Amino acid sequence: MKKTISILLFVFVFNFLNAQETISETEKLASFAKIYGFLKYYHPEVANGTFNWDQQFIDQLPKVLNATSSESLSKIYIDWIESLGEIKNCQKCDSKGIYFDENFDLSWINDTINFNKSLSLKLEYIEKNRIQGDQFYVEIQPVGNIKVTNEPEYKNFEYPGEEYRLLGLFKYWNIIEYFYPYKYLTDQNWDSVLKEMIPKIRSASNKKEYHLVLQELIAKLDDTHASITFSEEKSKYLPIKISHIDNKAVVSGFYNASLAKLNNLQLGDVILKLNDIDVKNEVQKNLKYVAGSNSNIKFKLAYIKIFKGLEDTISLTINRNNSVRTIKSKRYDFDDFNYRSNPKSIKSKSISDAIGYINMANVKEDDIKDIFKSFKNKTALIIDLRNYPSFIYYKFSEYLNQEKKNFATYYCPDINYPSRFVKTNLRTNGSKKAFVGKVIVLVNEGSLSLSEFTTMAFQTADNVVTVGNKTAGADGDVVKFDYLGGFKTTMSGNGVLYPDGTLSQRDGVKIDVIVKPTLEGLRQGRDEILEKAIEIANE
Image (cartoon, rainbow, N blue to C red):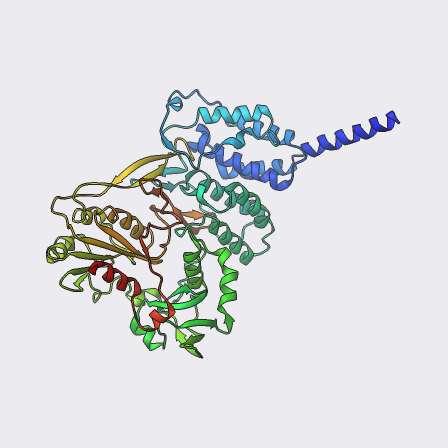
């Protein structure tokens, strides 16, 4: 009996230890991705461009996949690190900086399940003696965000072999890991994204599947600035804006009112079908492939995705005032709309003797002085930021603030300590001659990036009210770089917070009075946000 128990105990222990040692292919590849990126941006002899790092990946990949246990995998990594040369002691690396550290996590270095102690010690040593000065694969731009540099150009790689599909994933994953300021805000933990995407990348069996997986990957950033483009071929667009209202696709504005009228499209139209395809179902299928900071903007971008295309004419089934009809509508090159350079668009106007209105989409720096001079007797100003303004917030804020004020905390990547970010405070301008009446700022889902940044600056005015609905939630300068294969991709490059730590990324700017457009209001041609602003101005 005792002998039987001993045998069973032995078998149990053996199986337990064996289970502890075995490691799945996805786990091996995930650890390889982390080692690959860490060495690329931390190891002095790698980060300075000494090695062909992509070729190093190709050479090491079969070794990693052939590893039979965590111990043998650690040995592969140790041998690789030792082949890269000696690392000198870094005196500068001991300096203590003050960092924004929400994204910083190198705890995986001490992974006791997949790494042995010797490997962990080597990785710790590299962190403590990391590269200082210029990097080969990344540099800092004047505004603080990164520029991806010296990456090999891969042509005709629309659907590469598995090893290069993995290489593309690992390169991208590590750029986000070390230089994306909002990694800590993603819905899905970035480590789990890696483990989810590895098998999807490996199993993508053709170009279409592969491109869909990449769209899904980029969408994991939960960033309205994030995108990927596979072709230079220009899509065509309907001349209308579509918003998600009452869980419906609703015409909420025009890129070109004349072309919208020509195509029999009206405000408040609910679009039910596109070429006999149910819009609700199509949007739900596409949401996982759309990068957006919040659900509001994800729906808006999903509508743009499904309604654009290469065909000139499409069929739309719409509900107009409870009457369902089918119409034909043309699509156009976006440039045909003259949307951002319409000479007829107003810069400012008087709404009444007491209220002035400023449309920030069309105001240039040279206009500011004259606008405020013309409004010097007004008691309230309505500033419309439901658009994309020029970069004039600093000069403009001189006319809103009696004194300079902090309006944002800005944090930028530190390429000499990747995944750490350096903070600074941003200030408005100020003048004793600034406007002293009410300031009412208008925002909505069309307020994106610089519009949100400008809103934050204007919200420091002494007597300010912000009116509207949730903005796009994407703040900070955009970084553009290539995904392996020449695909163009983007992300937010710097982090922005309110001085009190409140998020603008994902959540959008602070709003005092929430007003959402309604179907009835749109059908009547009303601007309900502006109406509320005028009501507040008259109080």
